[in-house]
Length: 115
Image (cartoon, rainbow, N blue to C red):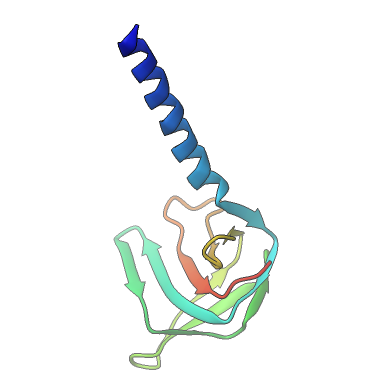
């Protein structure tokens, strides 16, 4: 009986942890932000993370594009066609991606994010 109660408590705790982290992000259709944090560019050869970036805008809607520049050398990295935006309310961060129909989506992380 004691073991069954322990298992029930453990499974309930795990369920809360999993759903809590999943609920901390929500999908939104447009955002504004104050600081670009990083860009992860993924293709069939793997992913490359850029931390010192500049974006050509400070707001975006799903369906628009964002140009990303590497501030380490001034080179244009990519233009990301935005297909999804995840908003992390608790951390005031957003993840902007091109995940639709891509096996390896690239994404931008921005801070000071508001939907």
